Length: 393
Image (cartoon, rainbow, N blue to C red; front, side, top):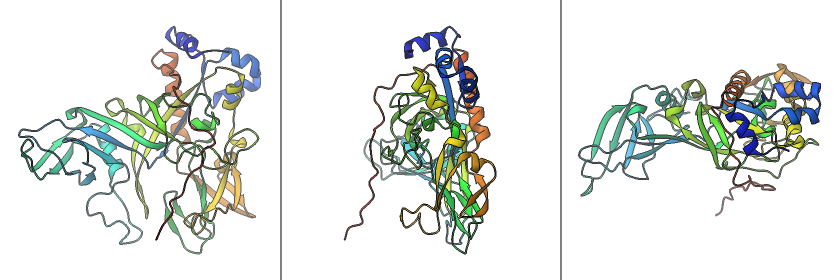
């Protein structure tokens, strides 16, 4: 048994033994669980892919004369201004003003909130246009200016739902192509799309939330952030395999971090034809090896993780609950899977290579005494179901 304090002391003295979630599998095969649990202090997990439920709060400071912003656009992307005078929130999926969207189907969705956030983190210049009705203490009614992230007092990423614990695998069983947040799906199950880092993914390595909880330290696009709440749509009461790993979408995390510390390599605006805009987010989470049970969970391999195959032409939009099949991430990552007797080409919306890079960066930061663990002050909810919206007369 180890404690957070003991592991942090080893990190401070640069003596901590740290492995990535990819490395720990072979290490335990060679050493055995008991010895490996004694030797290894931390396992780093990571993921990189589109996470639509993301955004940021920014503060401009006051102009002279002052303005209480009631409407605002950043590079023509609408920002939410229903908070304090010069605070704004911009969401990753917000479209640019006058984007034709899907009026000319399928729309291109070339620019939106995720791209604005990427530009901010990259240090590029953006334009602010803001309006107000004017008040006695905030008399200014209009402002137009340019700014960079260095001109802001604060730029804080606040993502309500990141790091899905497993997810659907999407196919299209209809006879025409469809455009989804899982990419373009060819007719007659012509391709299959998934979005997960599999064996590297944080919550798949901690299926029962033994170490990842509210207050956990995370690596968020280069910044040292934390889990501030359960993620929206967090659902822990799901079908699980004998290894405890969910076989469908389950837990989620709400994450926050300082954008001024982030690297634009790990935050990317995403355009999804026929669907909209989003933002790819890079996240790394360390798992302290407190005991053998926690170590065993981190040895999960792609061959042990199953995901449901869903028809996105009918079953997904109509919430039928029907699953066509289940497949492992080992099968998905091979490039082809067999569904109902048909060989189908598979592709990923997330980047396993980027996730490996992030897990390696986090490993190095811990080994160098630059990243410490934080014990959660509250567990993520267990046995929690997800409610549906009831459409009432």
